[in-house]
Image (cartoon, rainbow, N blue to C red):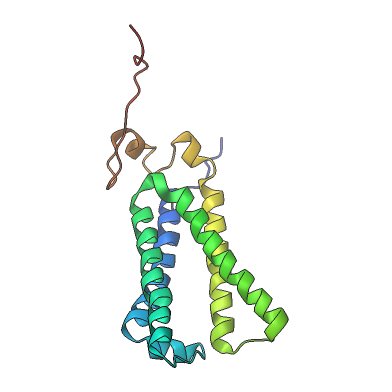
Length: 173
C-alpha cells in the first residue's frame, strides 16, 4: 500500500493564508487612501480637485477598503467563515477585473499601475479558487481542519468559534 504524500499546507491553513494575503493588500490600499489620498490618487491618475472629491476618495479607498481588509482578517481566524469569505473575496476581485476588462474594451490599455493591479487581481482570483477547491471535501467532512484530524471541529479551540455538541438526545422525552 502506498502512502499518500502529506499536503505541505492543510486546506484550512492555505485558505487562511489566502485571506490574510488578500487582507494585507486591502489594508495597504486603505492606509494609503486614508493617510495620503493624493499620493494614491496620483498613482492611478486621479485628480482630486475639491473637498468632495477628497471625501469620496478617502471613503472608498480608505474606509471601504479598511472594512474589506478587516473582514478578511476576521474570517481568517473564524473557521466557520472561511468558505463564505473566500467566495466574497473571489467575487470582489472578479468585479474589479470585470470593470478593468470593460475599460480595456472602451478606453484602451492602462498604464503600468493599472496593468499591475489587474494581474494582482487575477492572482488573487486564482488563489481563492485554489483555496476553495482544496476546501471542497474537508469542510463538509470536518477532516483536515487544522491538520490535526479535525480536533478543532469538536473542541471549538479557534478564536471566536463556538461548538454545539449534538448528542442525539434533543427532543427525546
